[in-house]
Image (tube, rainbow, N blue to C red; front, top):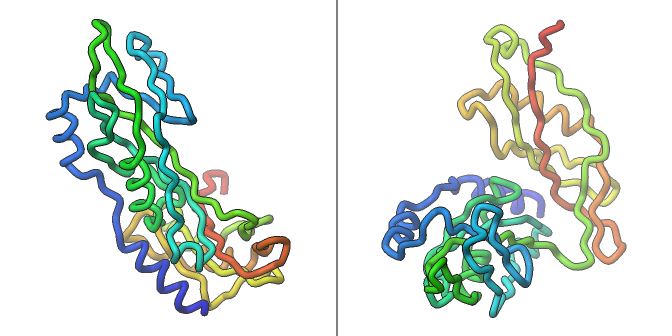
Amino acid sequence: MAPKTVGFIIIVLSVVLSVPATFSQAAQQLGAEDKVFLKDSGSVGAPSVKNKEYRSFAVVKRATPKYPPLATKARLQGKVTVGAIIDKTGRPRKTEIIKREPAFLDIFDEYARKAVMESRYSPVTGLLGQPVPFRIVVPINFQMPDYEPAICISQAIPDYPKEGYEQGVEGWVVTGVIIDRWGKPDEDSITVLDRCPRNVKFFDSKAKEIIKKSSFKAAAYRGEAEKGWVFLKVNFKIDTER
């Protein structure tokens, strides 16, 4: 079971977050100026402080995003922030992924974008009362009901690799690990998901050691403990007082 899930995570990491040029092109074609940039944070949207000259918009129809079947099976949760261009009629015309949490997990992207495209908004009017295209930011949470994810309750202190000191290099490593139902890390499942700098790998082994030495709380579904993923970012910063 664990090897299959680890393989899935590696596949997810292979997709790099990028902003398609077509989004900016679509904005220019529709005339959606940067200053008309609103946030959809609930049932009713409101302009930011800089955009008081524009009437606030309302969510006419909010589409509920579907939960990816693979994410359900792997017990994965996340958050996706979608940027969208809304035309004069309140219909979404183009979307982009602005941010995702965890940053490397793109399994929710398609479902989040589809939900935004299927939503509808009331038109925004400008100073002269005419409808204008605008951009919005929509944060979408993907959380499983009755599920408590595994968490790290005490992270061990990393040992700084000798190469890091010698080269004066700092960085961080994001690791993923399956925590069993007793709160113990499955060492065979420890996977490096991301790192900075990308070409520096001497932090990897130290980050894996941190996983083995840290304390975790098991995941739980409807009150029953079960295994689940934990994603841990380990920072490596040189101690200048050493």
